[in-house]
Amino acid sequence: MTAANNLPVDTPPFPLNTTFKYNSTNSDSHQPGYNIIGVEFQPEAEPPRLPEKVRMGSGFMPLASDYDFLKNLPIYKTISRDAVCSVLNCLKYKHVKAGRRLLKQGSRIDACYFIQSGSCIVEVEDNGKKFPIDRIQTGGIVGETAILNDHPLGFHVDAETDLELWALSRSDFDAICSDHPQLHNFLTHLLIDRFSPTKHTEKRKIGTYLITDMVGEESHSLVYKGLHQPFNLPVTIKMIKHQTALDSAFQEYFHNESPTITGFNHENIISIHKIIERFRTVFLIMERLDGESLKSLLQRWIILPLPRVTDFLMQTCSGLDCAHRQGIVHRDISPANLVIMPGDRLKIVDFGLSPPDEGSNQKLSDSLQYKAPEQMEGRNPDQRTDIYAAGVVAFEMVTGKKMFPDDDLSALAAKKLDQELQDPSKWQPGLPEILRRFILKACAPQPEERFQNARQALIHLQPLYDSYGLDRQNQIDKHRKMVTFSLLYSGKNQPALKKLLQDFNNQLKQLDAEIKAADIQDT
Image (cartoon, rainbow, N blue to C red; front, side):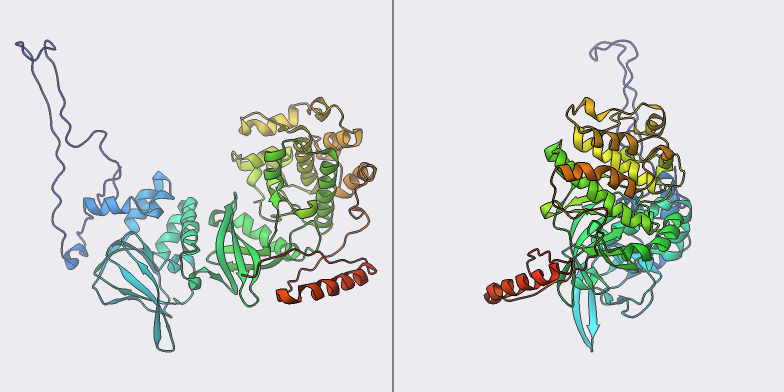
């Protein structure tokens, strides 16, 4: 395959200096009749680098060294093979002499630049004073905000040495993305680099929030630790990956549901403080959770004690009941989205982050284990879809096994409809009948055969919950709201402060309220 500007995309199937041998009569090179027929390929000598005006001319063709550079660009690694030519044909060469300004603070730019050779200085100008914040060298990218947003540039970029650059305009980038949506992954790559802890704080700000460290990566998002700068309060910042955030179906339903999601006030649902749209994606500013996922817990415990299983199920159903009564379906309940806090308080995370058509594209992922049959067939999910997932999670907690252990995940939908449900008591002989019936009913193939809402599931589990003597508040009758605040204090006043809070907590309990405290280091 060759790009339109004759830039080769494939490499030869053999080294360029290969010799081929042919033996006409025998294998002994000392005997008559032994011949060698060969061809030796030598790479064409690369012409000297041409002056700028010639390279910029209409007849300019990239050199082999240009291609060696371009094929190692991050953007090259994020696209499929059929998009390579489209990208390479849109790159335009630019030369900037040392000491010249490439980009001006306050201007709106329409292209980003890949540095093939040279270096440049990034500096912020404030009240006539300039403050260097970064130095970008060969292989780096400058002006990435051109394809991330159309806001005025917040800094100058000056050539420290002569620069050889390849420019990619926003209009060309968007045109290619319309045919090759996977190119949106490059935008996520740019932000991962931008939010690296080594970058200047100005580049790591999302409004009044500062990104500090990456915590992990999920199927649709990246998770960061952050600080609300005015008060130095710890938060979790979840950035939606661009391939999800720019999907039209996701945008429609997320914008419809986000006002309700941010309004959740339930002790079993993570609190979302704010949603910020920036850099062509979405950032969720959430409370910082000091716990571990149920997935991680199960990897260590394999099977959980039955009272603990019952407790977790009651809390999960309580949180789902709150969401369902407000018209919100989670769509992706799984051990990865259930976080266990100190004291075994459970929090459901990631409401609204599962694309509505994810089940129909048959992606091979662990989350398919917990999808209901109708969801995997592309039908609209409802609250019974979440109940199905809760049942599959319960099966895993009591047996230590997957309900559908087959590695052929692409056939899961058919199996979930046709295969007879596995009885959990086969692996857990002492399983209480209430828990056994909960799992079998919740995981029924047809939605109408399941619990029709989370409240029915709570009522079913309550007697078992009571029999274990669990002292958490009654999950059916008490849906209490929660507010989060932070108290900054000096260590020398801690004894007096502790007594004051104890007295205050005693008064709160008379109003069916209480204080839950967790120590957080002031950073």
